[in-house]
Amino acid sequence: MAKNYKVGIVGLGWVAGAHIETFKHVAGAEVVAVCSRRKLHERDLEKRFGIPIRAYSDYSKMLKDKSIDVIDICTPHPLHPEQAIAAARAGKHLVIEKPIAIDWDSAVAMRSAIHKAGVKACVCFEVRFSRQAMAVRAAIDKGLLGTVHYGEIDYYHGIGPWYGQYEWNIKSAFGGSSLLTAGCHALDLLLHYMPGEVAEVTSYQSKSESAYFQRYEYNTSSVTILRYADGRIGKVASVIDCLQPYYFHQHLVGSLGSVLDDKFTSYAWNGMAKDRWSHLGVPVVDSGDVSDHPYQPQFQAFIDSLRLGQTMPHTDFDSAFESHRAVFAADRSAAEGRPVKLTELATA
Ligand SMILES: NC(=O)c1ccc[n+]([C@@H]2O[C@H](COP(=O)([O-])OP(=O)(O)OC[C@H]3O[C@@H](n4cnc5c(N)ncnc54)[C@H](O)[C@@H]3O)[C@@H](O)[C@H]2O)c1
Image (cartoon, rainbow, N blue to C red; front, side, top):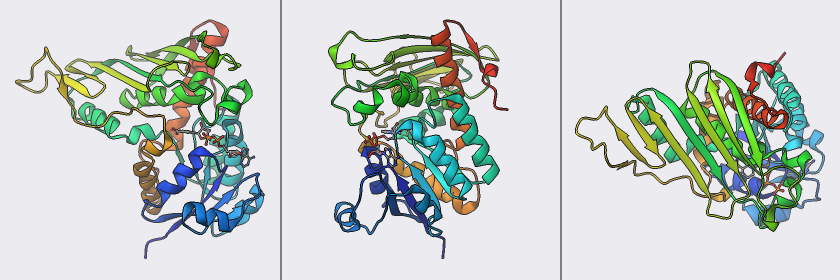
C-alpha cells in the first residue's frame, strides 16, 4: 500500500485552518499534529477539525516525533527560516507558507539547510496551480502567444484592519514589504509565465493616505520593472493599500498573441478574430480568502512527488527561491534608489 504522509503544522492561525481542511482532500497525506504557542486541547482540536490531531507547544518535541514526515510552516514570516532549517535538519520534508523569509541571508541559509538535508519542500505560491494560471501557462506552452516579450502581473488586495494578520503584518520586522508580504505571488506568477534569467530590477514604492493603512511601518504600494538578460521586460505592481475588490491583473504580450486576465487572442489560431478577445472559460483568481486558494492541487502534486522521490512541479523550493531573489532585489532597489542586478544577491 502507498505510504500515507503524516503532516505536522506549526502556527495554528488563519492559513493553517485552510491547510488542515485542504489536506483532508489530498490522497496519501493526513494532518496528525499541530504546534502552537497556546495550550491546545486535543479534544477541542478534534471537535473543530473533525480529525484526531496531536497538540504540541514545544516545536523541538514535534520535530522529534518520528511518525511525522512533513512539517507545514504557517507562522508569521520571520519565523519561517529558523523553523524550516530545524525541520530540514530533523529530516522532515517541508511545506512553507510564503514569503520564505523577510531577509536575504535567512533565505540563503534555508536553501543550504534544505539542500544539505536532501529533503523536499513546497512553497505556497499556489496561484501557479489556479485554473487560470494553468490555462494561461498551457496557452504559452502550446505556442499560442509566440514569444512573450512583455508581461505585467499586478496584485491589488487591500490588507487593512479587517484582515486577520494585520496586527503583526503592519510591522516592518514581520511583514517586511508590500512585495514580501503579498505581492510576491504576482512576481512569482510573472516568472512562471516568463521563465529565464532576470538581469536587473528597478522598483519604486509609495503609500495611500487612507487612515486604514497609516499604521503600516513600510510603504504599502510598489511597482517593479524587471529586465531579462535576453531583453524581455516585465512589470509587477503590489498594492496592499487599495480600496477596491481583490484583483490579480494578468497581461502577457507575445509575438503571436496576448492574454488579458481570462481573455486571449492568437495569430497562431487561423480564423480567430484579432479585434476582439476570446475567453479562456476559467475562473479568475479573484479572492484573498484562503478558503478559495488552490491549495488542493498544489499539495496533491507535492505528495505525489514525494512518493516518486521527485521534486514537485511549479512550486518547489528552488523556483520559489528565485522569485524571492527578485523580490529582495526589488526592495533593495526601492530602498537605495537605483537599479539592482540580481547577481548582487549572492548565494555563497
Ligand atoms: N499563500 C497564501 O496565499 C497565504 C495566505 C494567507 C497567509 N499566508 C501566509 O501564512 C502565514 C501565516 O499567516 P496567517 O494569515 O495564518 O496569520 P495568523 O496570524 O492568522 O496565524 C499565525 C499563527 O502563528 C502563531 N504563532 C506565532 N508565533 C508562533 C510560534 N513561535 N510557534 C507557533 N505558532 C506561532 C500565531 O499565534 C498565529 O496563530 C504568513 O506567512 C502568511 O504570509 C499565505
